[in-house]
Image (cartoon, rainbow, N blue to C red; front, side, top):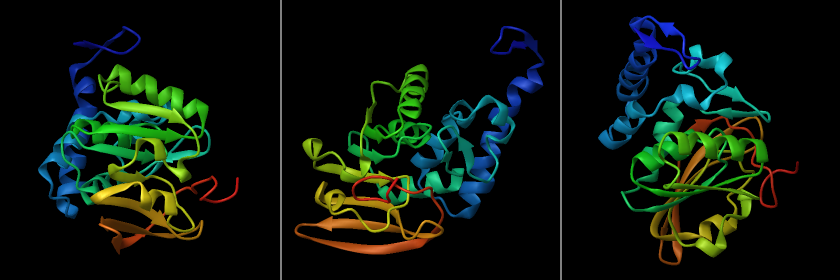
Length: 229
C-alpha cells in the first residue's frame, strides 16, 4: 500500500498508474513520433507532468494534448515540449532563457538536462506557483522565475546559449535575436493568433539562419514585441 497526498491509503496499483502512463507517453507520443535525443526522452520520463496541472485534470496528465492552466494559459502537449527542447540543442551547463513560464513544465525539462534557466512570466499567479513546484521537485536552484515582459527578453543577462518561447509572437522579437550567443538557437512560434509556424533561428556571428519546423498553435505572447493585451 501507499499513501495519497492527503495521507490516506491507496492501492499500490493506483500509486503506480501515473508513472506507467508517463512511460507509455515517452514511448508512444515521443519516441514513436521521432524524438531521438536520449537526454530529452530521459528528462520527459523523469518529470512528473501531473505536478504541473490543476489537480482536477490529473487524469489527463499524459494525454496527447495541451491542457488549460490558470490565468487563461495552457501547458503544451508532451510532444511539443519534447520537440522544442530537442530543437533547442542545449548542453549541460548552458544558460537558457525561457519566455512564458506558465506551469513551469518546460523549465523543469530544461533543468533536468542540466541547464540554468531564467524564465520570464507576466502573470504573478503562474510565476509564484511554478516557482513553488520547481522548488518542491528539487529544481529551484536551476531555474530563476522572474515577473516581466518576456517579449523584450533579458538584455542584462545576454547572451544566452538558447532561448525558447512558449507563446506565439506576431513576428520574431528583434531583442531575442540579439540576445543569442554565437551558435545558439531561438525556438519560437510565429504567426497570427489562430495558427503559427514553429521557427528555429540560429545565430552565426552577425547573421542568422531561419527554418520552420511546421505548424503549431500557441496562446499569444503579450507584450511590447508581442500582441497587445
